[in-house]
Length: 142
Image: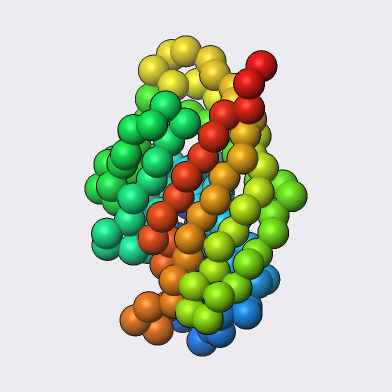
């Protein structure tokens, strides 16, 4: 079984003291999230998300933390590309809103898929660490 190096990176990012204006740390955590999904590393994703995390997907469905972690761990989900670009960090005290574009490509349950779109993530500094509390993404029309 291949050992992921993402979890130790996430642990390191979570232990460094942070401030709301620490844009580089939040961007690093966004990138760590992508890397964790690329490696089906649910434990790393679990550490990045707040307990009451909620994600709204393009189709309008809502997913909680447990559902997102389970989907990342699912080996039938195999992303080849998970890339975020055009990232802008908007700090507001102990909250940071991150907006950007994404490109995803891979195989899920044997079917190839690819999508591009925009995302908005809400990170909060709570309990001495940054946690993503909410995420929303939209799919760019073809």
